[in-house]
Length: 158
Image 1 (tube, rainbow, N blue to C red):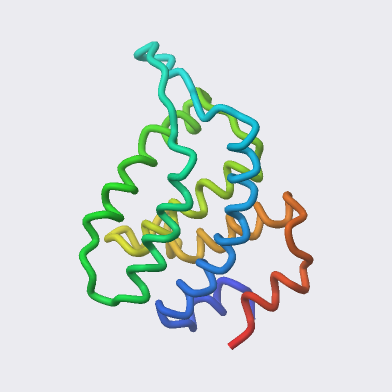
Image 2: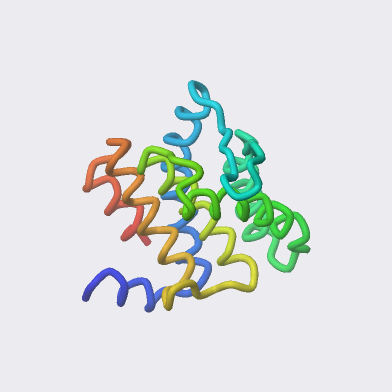
């Protein structure tokens, strides 16, 4: 069974739990980067500078965990956090903001994790949690944060 098929056999809670665990590890790349770098980029169309809050990813991850631990809670806060990702994601796509790949994948993995809580459960034909898992794994591998065995343990442990 390929990994995508395995993910399709899991219920949303289990898939979210795996994505959360991996995103928690990937967050280290972001935290390390924010300590030594400004999170600022220039929008080349409007010629304006924008800054990203260093705590955006940690706040988003904490809110996702809160929503899954308190099923049925309001999603107002997660929607506000998702809105904070919009301009930086466009800047990345437009090459206005360049991040090391492991940092960018950490950023995108937590964004897609949050999308899985919100209405967008499918992006580019893939479940958002599956996408978050793949991006987090790439960030973890590039950052040498866990071994392949440790990653597998997070994914396949019941």
